Image (cartoon, rainbow, N blue to C red; front, side, top):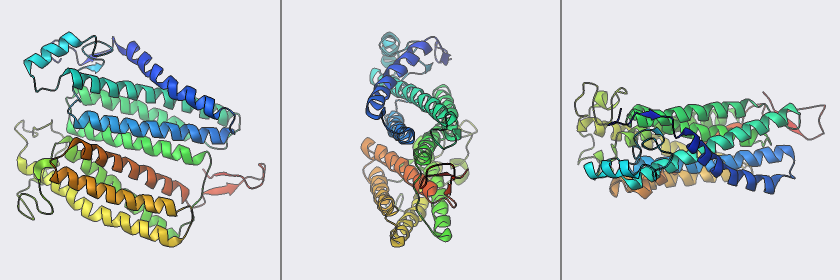
Length: 384
């Protein structure tokens, strides 16, 4: 219970579903009008790209919700004090805001939180429509790709919804919020894969260079997880200068407390306040990761450019550009006191990095395509 309000109140679920459906109809109608005469594979690829674009926006809306401290703007789920919108809950919100004027619940924060939930519901509707479209087209053998990725994406967004609910009902529990962030980036990766499998494109890489690509991708995932842990524990401001921290190259740090996963926000596992040394350890770990990952991305981009493949070159420059973007926005967070614009920009860079690396991994997959003797010459499909 949160006051007299249950953590879960399913009464407004139908209204929120209607709101999500209404928001989804606009992009779906626009897509159908624009692409109704395209070839099935081209249409599916365009649909996946549209969904990827909208899901990318959703990740940024989620970041804005978290970073503006609006994650508990409506402290129950899926609605707001049992209503489908903050308009119906205005009396409850006003009472909560009057009780704690600087607290988690305000009218503005409630609208930000519900905007995120409406957007997430709309993306769920669009992902469902994409899955149905894929299953229909593949069952008719009009598109030569497995529906596995579409079904996996639909399942994934269901899990994301569950983590979104837990984020609220477990009061911003850092491990849950971090997993919710990683799940959002995982959704982008799944949609990027779908955008590639319906109309495959190939980039030829030497096996050693592709192994390097996979290693860098693994390092990026770890670094993003560390960044999520910094954000969800509010550890950004533990170090307010660069390259030193608190006037030292190696300040007082408590890694055991900082990386103990089972603790509530601001509280250690024993129920006491999370020590500042723990926040410092979280921040410094992410900073050390950046010193490793950013050069690795730059080297990978340079090696991809050196390959001379015309298909690889734009992705190589994208990697280099994102490395610069992430460095600038990360430094901005530290030196400027964690401004909201820099914080959201840093999340955007992470999301873009996931998409670019996913596309490169799919396009450079060994035995990427096999000939189909029963299909027109020159056409290929992904090897399963």
